[in-house]
Amino acid sequence: QVQLVESGGGLVQAGGSLRLSCAASGRTFSSYAMGWFRQAPGKEREIVVAIAWSDGNTYYPDSVKGRFTISRDNPKNTVYLQMNSLKPEDTAVYYCAAALISRGYPTSVGDYNYWGQGTQVTVSA
Image (cartoon, rainbow, N blue to C red):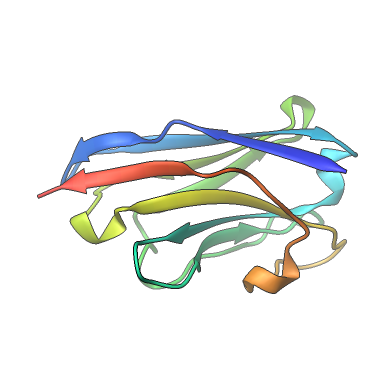
């Protein structure tokens, strides 16, 4: 089992920045691909970023590319999401997720095995 706990959400003005953290416990953290997802009211959960365990390759959808950056600190069992130039449309609950996969980075919700409880990010205009 893997437990994931997100932190760092909050209220920020458009153009501002936030850094989310996801602390993992349980099985060996470094064996998992990690992802951040978000879900806005009335919308489906969508991928924000994913990072592969094997080579550190990352995936960003166009909506966040150039603004968001993922990083992971395996010794600390923590993954971070740095969000810059935030927009009101970034408002959502953000979830950290782990996928038991040795290569690559899944981008679909169904490919992830473990989820955090979510943290709210609100960007005001």
